[in-house]
Length: 288
Image (cartoon, rainbow, N blue to C red; front, side, top):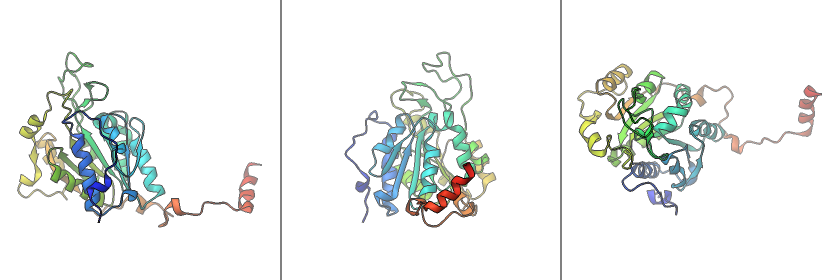
């Protein structure tokens, strides 16, 4: 029987003590174990930033990619080996700044992977600059007079881009976070999961106490229907994005793989890709 310990390796995380990313790592490990996934059946692809280190701390296939490019790598992995459970991870800078184009088109494409964003509203690894998720007026080294741009709204972006699974959690709620990641991994399509993961070193505004005071759990809203996209958008806007739980899920939309003509059941990594000499010669005639 698989346990979360099977997803541990000997690499010790070097995040700051108290960083919310520790909980995200634990939730991914627990979710994979709860789904009875073997370490060799999981691939974790990360970008750059504090969150980018996560792929190296889990005993599974892992790749520490470049800034903003975790999603195209993760999609390539899934297309080549449909048997893999693929999770892409990153921070709000990674996913909502340089990687925003990939985020939107991955959502629109609905490929069967899970994307977990560790949202701390600041650039942590580069020592505390304003990110796309920092609120207007937020003072950092890069905005000493306060940020003049409004904060990007990732849930609204995901819903308006056609996401079939949108969820949000808080790193202190390990039980809910694990359950959400499990649900995202089981969903046949692109699963977008934003996680409030406070930076204890550089963000003294959006702290654990701040989130506890402002967050509303969707489970506390009587009659909330996560299958109703319009209601999901309305609820997110009414609460200024500060909700946790599964916000929207549509299981009727086909995934990208199901729409691709000629996408074989046998994973590409197991296919015979050797070309016979006569076939190669025929192909070469086109260029001679």
